[in-house]
Image (tube, rainbow, N blue to C red; front, top):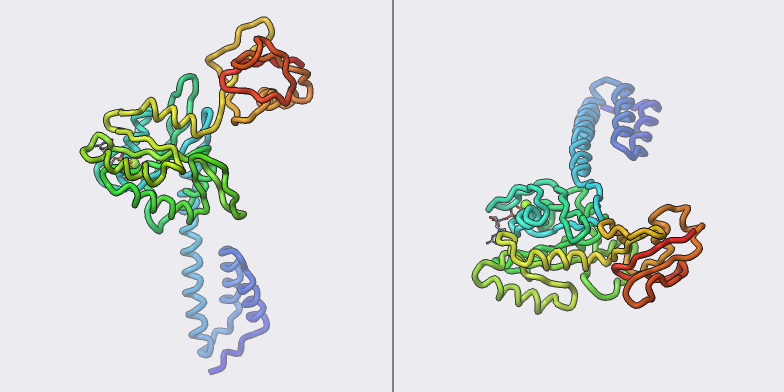
Length: 328
Ligand SMILES: Nc1nc2c(ncn2[C@@H]2O[C@H](COP(=O)(O)OP(=O)(O)OP(=O)(O)O)[C@@H](O)[C@H]2O)c(=O)[nH]1
Ligand SMILES: [Mg+2]
């Protein structure tokens, strides 16, 4: 039997085809269902419209869950920098995280213990650096929100389990990072990347070095990745090399600390200003207050390789530990 569809219906159908979002599609489909002639000839078509509507509504239902999952991956930065821990299931991310931040994240001998990212603060000398424990990286599945968390970090800590094949684990980590269009490298020049790619510095850490034969596995990652990453063996369980690890984390961040002082007063060495390496006196002024930059006339600086209180201009490159007095 012919369907004899009306111009009204055909117009609604066109709107449905042009609709881009699910709510738009639902709206157009509602009109189609309302105006479709209700006779034997359209019975099958009406059935199809109904099941299409059910699918669209289901899609709409699912979306808040995805949005919620993404929200969980939105971790506000705190402290001098944010470092995200990445590794395969059971590599010891949560053990390490709890050990060096003192924050709690469940540890268990079965995989997939951690289900959402957890932030904690690590103290390094006079700095607070934020670490983020994460759910494990797995082959061919990326949680929504996870790529953004990684892209927004200041550096990554790639953790491999030395009781399992660490080179294989690094293979999976790089493949998944590639999939997210994230390039990682611990040292050397920043490679030129295609648009849409992000670049991050990373540290490679071999965990569980307290276990027998772990050091043989460590040798293997050293041989493979020595040129690309700073590498360190640790034991999260026994706290081995934890001070070295903190130092390496600070190093990979590529930042430096300076201290500001006001004329006639001592600098407060407990309150560093952190800046990217390669920053100038002008950048310090900008970090204090945006109005400072324009008003800055000169600075006096104390530190290695200069006279005490040497007068410098705004484009002067500062070094780790410098004390700077800004004059406006
Ligand atoms: N021997 C030894 N065992 C460790 C070490 N670090 C972690 N483990 C053990 O490895 C298992 C996994 O540790 P977790 O810290 O939960 O690992 P995870 O990477 O957070 O695991 P997921 O959250 O599932 O990805 C636990 O049984 C830990 O006790 C270590 O340094 N040495
Ligand atoms: Mg965990």
